Structures are given as C-alpha cells and as structure tokens.
Image 1 (cartoon, rainbow, N blue to C red):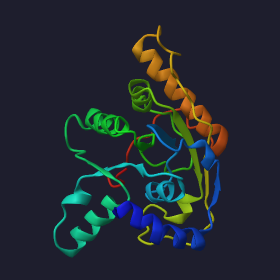
Image 2: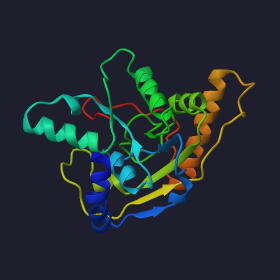
Image 3: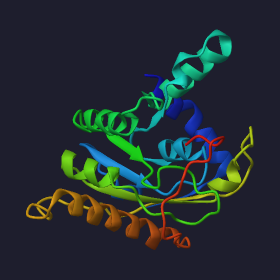
Length: 224
C-alpha cells in the first residue's frame, strides 16, 4: 500500500526533477521471482532502482531504520516500509546467511529482490569483485537475474551528503541471465563463483567501470 503510494505520488515528481536516463525496463520480467543485481555507488541507489524499475523491488535495510522512536523513528519506519525494504540485523553473527534467507523467502513469494554483489558502496568508482551470495541466491531460487548498471548516483548523494543534488543519472536494466540447468553437474562452490562472475561481467559491460580486481570492504563509518 505504502509502496504503491510512493510510486503514484513520489515517482512522477522524482522523474520530472532528475530526468534519469532509464534503459531496458522491458528486460525486467513483469511477474515472478527475479533478482536485480546492481553496482553500488550511493545510499540513493536503493531509492533510484525502485523508482525506475517497472515493478516493485525490495532491498534489505538495517533493522535500526525500523525500530527508532519518536517522530524521526516513525518517519524512518514509514519511509523504508514504503520503499519495500526488508529489515535485517547486521549485528547478528549469521547476518550474511540470514540476509540471503530473507531474500530467498521474498523470491519464493514471486517478488523482485535487489542486491549489490559488491557488498558495499564503491568509494572510488571502481567495480569490485562480486561476493558469491548472489550466485547462491540465483541458483537456489532458480530465478533469472537482471544485471543493473547505475551511473551518476555517486554525485546524486555523495557519501556524507544529507540532501540529494540535481544531477543526471543513468539506470540500465540488462538482459536477464538464466542459470537453469547450467550448473547441475558443477560443484556448488564453483557454480556460485562462476554464476557470480557472469553477473558481474554483465554489470561491467554496461557500466564501463574500471575493475578493482578485489573485494570491497565496508568502511567502519560508512554502512552499506
């Protein structure tokens, strides 16, 4: 309900103000489970993708956003609920697997789930190596993966910035990748790695970012 209200009220205004260059929306399946795997440049990415996607997309968000008190807590809770966020406790010792389990449960209801295989925002604009959680999720859920390439969102809301700037951004939804039956006889670890690398190669082909050639690590003060 809140998500629909956001799209009806906020989406037209946001698109009119920022006029993003959106390409390939017809590559996103109209229904059924699908993973949208994107590069990650800004906190705003989790707003940009839902606002430009042709269907509802859910992302994980820190459960702190849902448990605050007072007016600020209420606004945060309403906002993250409205954009379809799924709360997760990052301090849980099993946070990584718990996140994937929540994502899998969402996909099994036929939903669209957004994920950043790099794990955290790129602080230097390079594309980092994908973590294999996205491969596990795709192979376990048995659903297609739509690679997504964002450009300009790092200027929309740079790290540390409170308010978004008026800049042009680009969102490209790539052709769906279907892994059905392709890794049936491949060891699980290798299958996850190869699926993840294929997804990242598709993102790189669209984004044109320099490859970092290593994993990205979250800065203590940065968040995801």
